[in-house]
Length: 342
Ligand SMILES: Nc1nc2c(ncn2[C@@H]2O[C@H](COP(=O)(O)OP(=O)(O)OP(=O)(O)O)[C@@H](O)[C@H]2O)c(=O)[nH]1
Ligand SMILES: [Mg+2]
Image 1 (tube, rainbow, N blue to C red):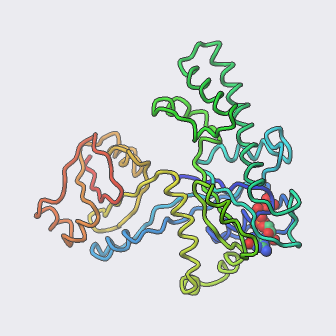
Image 2 (cartoon, protein in one colour; image 1 turned 120 degrees about the vertical axis):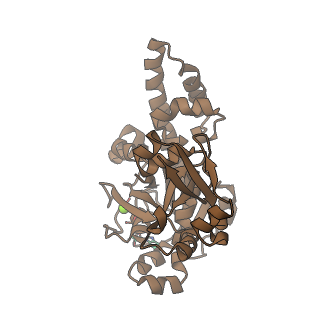
Image 3 (cartoon, protein in one colour; image 1 turned 90 degrees about the horizontal axis):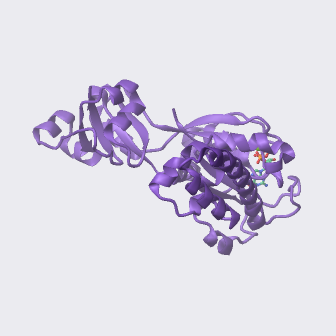
């Protein structure tokens, strides 16, 4: 299972263009709003030089990067939370994603209709944020009603969230303890999901520098160009350094999700990268590979990837005493190479 990122934004801002550039999948792209109705789903390899370096010494038959999933969702409009423009259905597609990348239109093009008239990234971000906030407010009220009847212990947390939403704070900005966060996980609130903004601009005519500084995490991309690179070969796009731009987006999403990567080498047959949430324990990481690795976990041997490279191979690393034997409570670190014992 891959972690999934929802591509969100107003209609006609370049969401499908981004999706196509990332996944190389053929999807419908057109200058008329609401081109995408059903979500497009695609899986993307997470670029990682460490995997390449590990493979250079392990020389496996197969190298498998880890992946994340992108979901290209229909455009949201004002009042979507009340169902405008099929809004409710689209919001439920966002609900099932773990993070959001919001595409914001900064390009001018008379051939591509702008649903709110003119270029104004700040206003557009507000429109989307308000819709997500309203939807969460509505969900929160509904949940509270049910919990009140049952006098559920989550009540206090939900009331705290309701208050925050009332002050127009996205849930990700409300100060919650780890316990409170765990309590609300099941509700999949929209404004709790981490968000990365992608400003889609194709010229420097419109200056958004000041505005950009206010955003917590933002990236720039000229999707018009990206669309063209999907028609180039891998090599050509590398030469144009455009691939690097797309890699940046993938990594920004990966980081926003607070994900880390560990590696396995399967006795030298296959080097493989895997994804877990930061803070995962060793058996939890094993569970990503196979449920047996979690349920029947006994111990694991672990080495940071750089140390393995320095040792030259697994056997030598063991001789040097660099393999650490860890138990159930070990927290996996980004870049660990792990061999599970079950
Ligand atoms: N000039 C210009 N056009 C762009 C740029 N990015 C995308 N477009 C064009 O904008 C139009 C809309 O792009 P899409 O990717 O279909 O937009 P979308 O956000 O998926 O739209 P919906 O599915 O309708 O919500 C297409 O004609 C694209 O070619 C850009 O950076 N500059
Ligand atoms: Mg689209």
